[in-house]
Image 1 (cartoon, rainbow, N blue to C red):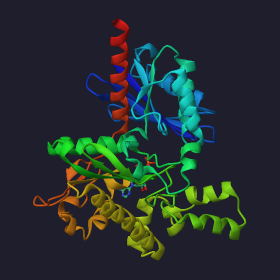
Image 2 (image 1 turned 180 degrees about the vertical axis):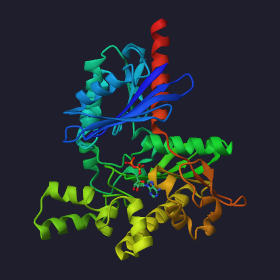
Image 3 (image 1 turned 180 degrees about the horizontal axis):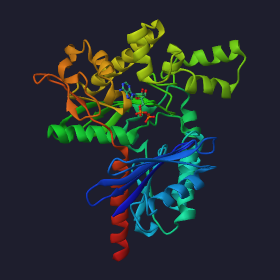
Image 4 (image 1 turned 30 degrees about the vertical axis):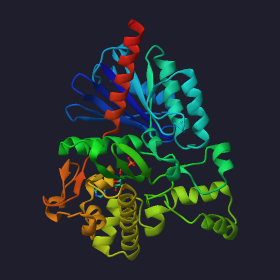
Length: 407
Ligand code: ADP
């Protein structure tokens, strides 16, 4: 079975073509600057060869048509005809309270995803564009939606409700949804596979640190709390997002700076976080360099704030789970920054976290245990693989669908 996984952002389209026989990826890539000047597609073949195609990509439809063209091209492709693709799996960011698992995309599902555009205005519309493009280009191929919010649908009400008038929850669905669910699911499960332990017996704290960053408390295989909220703005300090913030600050800034809703939203989503604090960059590598090489004070402050916030959530999640057995790092920073992992775990021996600096040093993008062998809590690095989860869910749903239609 061959499955195309699409992750459509507002100006990018990431794709991976899976051969599910051996879960290999013969072709993957990304279309960037979709709808903007200087758009291009970058691909990587199974042998590691990388190719870049420049070209005008005015929208998602053109981008996906371009990607499908490459997939079937003699020179760079890996299939002869598009009908060799059995299904397309999409990352869909918000599935609201309606979807607690992946689903086959029908007109009704699509309408629901559209309804949640209001909650996820930066993400769901792009996901829908991807779904519609496939519908136009290869209408006979079934499509599956895999939601970022689904894994967190097991949160209990006392964890997902906000203490604002209850009627607003009823009226608008204002509550914590949580995001990065596919990653939290994958890394918690994979950590237990590596340790050869039953996830049903474990209290796991998953720490996904990328440009966007979030944590989850995973007890008995279920997410019981997570740091992102109604939108992906809440929780940890991120590249350009503030994370947790006194809501009173927003109206204060709006009043003082005489700015409206859209400007304040841009301020906390795009101009805050590590970029806003350090003034250096939103990119962790550049911030670490500025702190280590130039002793840039604001970069040092930003890093201290970043690590402190993660540490605070570790305490909170250990507390709500009655302890912790496994701590898992993932995401660009979690997988590649030994410095961040060390600073976050520093001083947590009282929780049973015995961090091993030697094992951590220089470790990048590899599955590993970075706690001492005597440590009651296992600290791990597990590179995330959301695309694989999307491909596996898609395969399962398509196989069930085929079985049903045979009956
Ligand atoms: P996204 O959320 O966009 O998928 P990623 O998971 O790719 O983001 O993470 C991007 C972040 O990872 C950036 O801040 C980048 O600086 C950071 N990163 C990547 N490699 C390293 C590294 N070697 N050291 C520190 N940070 C790194």
